[in-house]
Length: 388
Image (cartoon, rainbow, N blue to C red; front, side, top):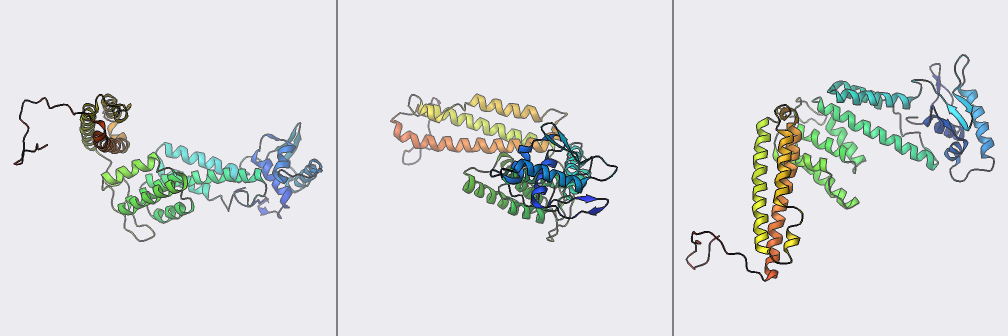
């Protein structure tokens, strides 16, 4: 199933099965353990243009497959049931089922923090693949199933590389991930992994270029920019010279990987929070200034939509509360940094756009800005112009 259809018995590979009976067997095994209707089998074998004798041909193909698959002293693989046929290959006999079991085990190991074991298990699962899923299916029904299985494979690949990176390994990962990104350029998770591997090898500039390439491609092909995970990783790359923890290694391209810094300390989160609160305060002042300058004009409701200073400060305070509790700050520090840096970039963008928009609108409002209420005289230069 994980490649061209192969049938093995008693340790030897049986002769290849003809294309149409093979398509029927594949369709049945995909729904192993449940009754498969003749209509489903017909659709898998002939698609939308079945012959008038399709029902009888299905019965003929099933009889032929029973002769090939059945062995004395073993349970039948295909049995007739009301409404269709039941395919039962037996526990652990189907490579697809073994792949699914190993993938589930690898993900469970990763969830427990056993990244080295998870990477090995997922690598074992991926080793079951011999080529494109289901070989080269002809009908639409089987091509859809093949695409589903290929998606499962790619998800396992991403999980395997993620576990390798979490365990501190980088040896050979950069080259493999670069190849996979070239094969699947719109798959953002693979690009996240490639950027992480590059960063851990001390190649931050290459990691940022990988982000730019992905963002440009996504905009050109789909009309959207990079997703939140890519943007958060880019923010971390711009904010720090040090990658997440791991071990030094040499990748297969010969680049010496830098020794990795320890996890982000709590002080980094505190410093970033302080900077963010300062940014939010600055934005609050900008918004209030814009409101005063545009008060009473039609532009006021456009410059200051739903993004009020109070809401901004609340968002910052909630982020701080999530990541500064004593029991969570060490474990959550990397995630706090990513979230805070992304929020920081958003705040700065909003500051810049608010100032630019306000300055652009002011000449068209014909509205006098409010006079300063300070008692101190406004400083002026030699020509008498006010200095701001």
